[in-house]
Length: 321
Length: 250
Ligand SMILES: Nc1ncnc2c1ncn2[C@@H]1O[C@H](COP(=O)(O)OP(=O)(O)OP(=O)(O)O)[C@@H](O)[C@H]1O
Ligand SMILES: [Mg+2]
Figure (cartoon, rainbow over the protein chains, first blue to last red):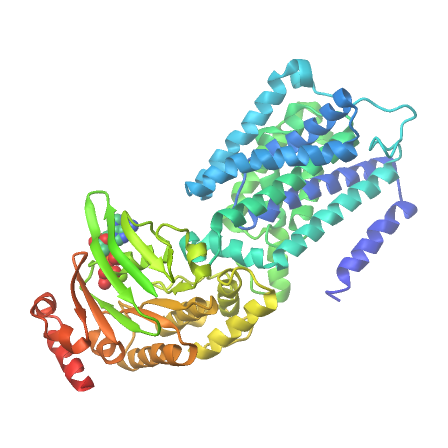
């Protein structure tokens, strides 16, 4: 049963649009899948106590990088996204290397990475000539609507499958990381860096590896998000609120279990949509308030998140907060 | 095998280890003793790369290793245990040791790491199943785990920081036997730090005594325990026990 479950869920998700494909639910699902991919990317490192508040920055680099390369150099997102991923990795290493060398961990690490979000937001907002500043930015559309080469698709169903693919890839990567030796090393590092070093772990190298992976994945999510929405603004793809939203969603769903961040995405997006529908545009920003409050509540009372707690109840498995 | 010369460690203005030189030969068990705060663990920290020496050289198998990061030193063959066990609580006993087996051997195949972990766990007498968590281990069990972690890295030189035991006499004897077996069966050279000198004196080939970061004596257990400076340092503690142990050995 446990072995079969992922396959059943997978098959159901592939079959879904053939059965039901009303545009609004489809749209919600695509958005959920893309953000789930982003949140899973965050959790790849976040679950090892490397709590980054800089991932909004990586998302922003992915989104703006992809759009700018397309508009200015005519580079297809198929190349633009990988280039943006490399840029995000470079940025991640510039921040993570000194953090590791000077042993900036825990809360201090979170604070340093917070600055990274802020900087990317500032750059995107201030480079008005290039990025359109706070008014946002639009990748140029190709003639005729859909074009695989341009990473632009007309039908929601195509987008659904693209998003599904990235989401599944994200889960696969995290699944693989969780089962590799690097997961042991990172658990050990999270507990006691000196003892991990004495066990032969190159602490800095392992931290940088996972940070680079996580940043690259998040940038990819940013690029995909940009291509889907065909509009990005500094606030929606970068900045502190996006970073906080990632932390919130991952924590609420559960960072120690594979489907946790996905469940977190479902909750946050439904919450945001609900607030928007009930309160209209007047409620803009309310979601952040609700996130913030819930985040505190969850960290105190349910640090394993909803899925983590449910999983523990069901299996009594060894899990640690 | 190991040649240390002029080793110095200062913390701010305080000199924890001052100008210590010594050598360890292949297959030897060297005992390292000295009162609290005399610099024993600090020497281990420098030998294993946890701390960089302020001055001095450390040559291991002909290579200078002073100041290298811990993982490089381990991969050259020096394993260490911590005085206060530092297990990874979120990993199982097996995973703790497998981690050391994997990274401590320079990331070989996972199978090889697991084999090393199983051998180390069997040797120290801990369960080799994959899932037992460390929660149930007492002081003696945690010391065994420390030892298994160090052994899984396949060291050629083992730095065993055992002092502040927390073990009863029987467990002490067991620990001593363990070190003897490690040398006999695996051919591992050992430096052993211990507070309770009775046991140590029975096992080691040579002893080095530290006081306030300085080496005050070195030699056979019988010589060292007759040394007036050593007796002075240990006076009122267990000087008589030292002499008794050394006598018993002869
Ligand atoms: N990281 C550090 N920073 C500052 N001082 C330190 C540090 N590590 C050790 N010391 C000091 O250096 C001296 C030597 O400590 P060390 O731990 O080497 O002693 P020891 O011989 O192992 O003692 P014990 O028998 O109690 O284990 C002590 O005075 C200790 O307070
Ligand atoms: Mg000590």
